[in-house]
Length: 378
Image (cartoon, rainbow, N blue to C red; front, side, top):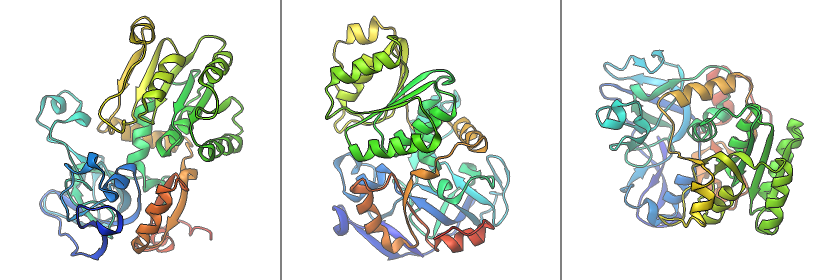
């Protein structure tokens, strides 16, 4: 099978190869999935460039990639049941790629998403940038027909956005998203779909903000505001947000950038008693909180650290949102019909030319026919 392999501890082409690898055989409790579509995540970018933050987690050679959907190809002994029922050859599926121990205090108290022994497929085990991927049956999620292949390709990332935004009921709330990357874009879409009264987006890229404005216009969402916090003075942006929120401040801030400046900006604009939901990872391991007493303690804010997806309530909520009409397919801005084009795909992701880049290992039209979906247009 064709696969994208982190072949050596090096950056770019020197460390990533497109190889012909053996098709894995599912062992007891495992399922082999034919990959229909797979998407690039920010973590894959770190692996590709061999960033210091990832080097302790990946031991080359390793097939990477952890966002995918596909069809059950082979079922190992004792693997006939997944999270939501019996498995059959040909089932349309995705998978939770964080594999937990089920025994630690976190797992046993319903917090498996912060399991201390988590192993991640695509980092610690071979992943989904391949024609086939082997995963535990217990992590398989059967997908309904209303999930398009292009969306099924990045449910892992969509789950992060759902987890980040759904820490509180957003109906009637004002929501700010700091950082309009892929997950920030999906978070804005979830907020609008969930009945937020106003959505505010900040970023440092005019290109990203123009994408945000086009999305809002397409949705006919009038209570949308986008600000470039690099070119517009912070005091001016804060004053505008104060006016937008009638002097109260933002109910919920979803922080996606990991920037100290963005986190402090979020603390400035959040209302008294408001909520900060924090997903973005800083370039280093620390951030500086300015005026902690005034902006955190005296404001009485609630801060949520977000990692991964709650197992499996986030998946259930995500599928419910898609069933009710949540549209996130628009974040797919580049597609490729072969994993041989991986280097070009990640270059476009690097250049911020596409929020999500999706690969179809056997071609999109072939995958659609296999799924029984209507063929995509040109």
